[in-house]
Length: 294
Image 1 (spheres, rainbow, N blue to C red):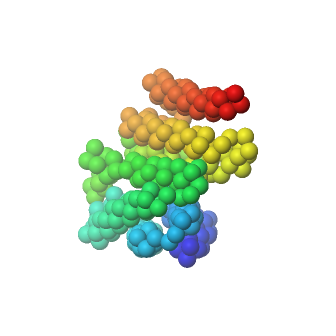
Image 2 (cartoon, rainbow, N blue to C red; image 1 turned 90 degrees about the horizontal axis):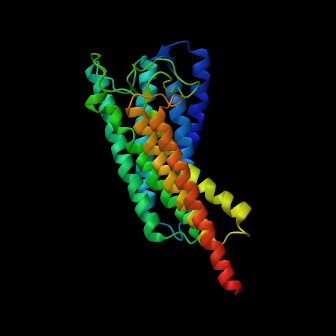
Image 3 (cartoon, rainbow, N blue to C red; image 1 turned 60 degrees about the vertical axis):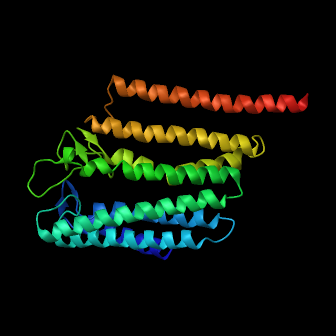
């Protein structure tokens, strides 16, 4: 939570920077990247701390993994802010030996963070959070956020080499980075953008626990714990498929808001499958109630 407080302060500084610093980098205010990363780490750190508090007893392994996550996130943010101060891009930049070394350090830090995140997930599975609904939400949230991290891997693969000297990857597919994008988020509106699946997958860490809290808060007296847990599983499965679908759409060079017929069919199939699974869960609960009444 000390790290979260530091990132909150950095978010404020970065927000001010976007207003007072007129420099632009790859089509966005130069302080936009540290602002988005700082806000993301505030959400991530707060959520991880909350999840650790749900464990039935303290876990040294999980606490050490969380400390590693903080250390790796700090390396990431130091590089990002340092490059902003130098007026240079932090990602995919190999124009100089220093730029290349900093980008490589970021890549290594994220890899270590990934495995520390896995370690926390394993502890959560072993220790078993007593609340079944919360346990399902936390487990699926941790797992799907790993999927979100993996969704960023194609950004640095050879197929994403834009053919620009000193640049080794890109967020956008089919168009150059820095083109027209959605307000604030910056996601490309003219081509595919791999940040979309990455973003959606990462925030399963918050979305599924929020769903669990809402189910318990508003339907806790109408739906038993087993039913609410099953609904969280259905939502988790749908969320994972959506993350893959958005990444698949981006890899085809397709803007988020301009889906083709194939993408629309896939979305419709996901909606139907999710609605059907939800209906089956609720029908199973109804049959159980009727059996008890008989």
